[in-house]
Image (tube, rainbow, N blue to C red):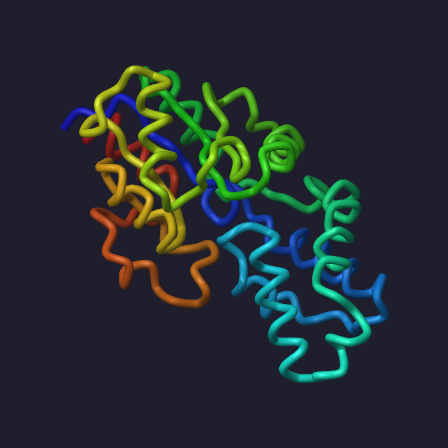
Length: 225
C-alpha cells in the first residue's frame, strides 16, 4: 500500500479543543445574560464549524425558552463569538497523546502532511501555533479557505492537487462522520480515530475504511506495516 499524503482533521483528531470551544460559547452566552451550558452538551455539537454549533445551540435554547428569541437575536451571538474566540483560542488546547511523535515520524518517513478542518483558518492556525504543531504541516486548510468546506469533495481534492498526489495515494484521518464523508466523496482513504467529537455516536457507524486507536498507530501502519 502506498500513501504519499495524509490529511488530518484538527479538533478532536490532533488536538483536544472541547474545553476552549465550550468556554468560547459560554462566554458568548454570558454577554447576553444567558446561563452557561454544560461543556459536554456543547461538545456534542462540535464538528460543523462554530457558527453551526451556535445555531444548533440557539435552537435548543429557544425551544426551552421561547421568549429568548425576542430578547437575543442569533446574529448577535454569532458576532459575539468572534471576540471570544480571539481571547480563548489556543489557551486550553492540548495535543492528544502521541500526536507530536506521530507527526514527526511521518514527516521523517517522507509522508506529506496537511491539516484540513472546518474551523476558520485563522483560528486553526492559532491552535496549531499554540500547541507547537504548525511546523508539522505543509498545508493548512480551514473552513473558510475554499469556497466549500468538509465534507464537500472539492476540499480534499484541492489538497491532493496542491501536492500533485493521486487521490488513491492519499488518506484522510478524522474523528467524525463529516471526515469519513469528506474522504468518501473525494476518493481518498477514509481513516478514523475513535476518540474526539462525533456527537456521541461511535465512529464505526460512519463506516471508515480503518479505525486507528491512536495517531501513533497511524504512523506505525504507514511506516512499519
